[in-house]
Length: 163
Picture (cartoon, one colour):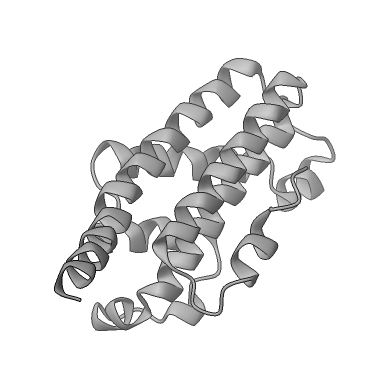
């Protein structure tokens, strides 16, 4: 796995910004693609679920004041399902991207440790499912970039123009 996974990529910054979140998502996606090439389809699905979880958790922290305005508590958002629901409520994801995120949640739930504990065996993940989740993650990444990162970039550019 890459040295720039999750914690290290974001931990270097005191203030996490949307660019770091997008970079994190792309890093996880690249790791999932490596899993696909290595025929580690289960690991790829875990990686995609982690990408979505990490990115939405980070955005919840970045925009915690906005999250509180809609009546949610950022610190209590600890599982992927409610994070995706919040992303829909906040307008970060909608339509196709929200459906894609929900499919990722469903896929990640299949590989969750609780499921293994109940069934006593790992689920079979086929290449077609991993490919579909990679497509879903691309849809989510694009939507988050358009709705979250680009507005921040435009604000930063305006600040530079004023200065």
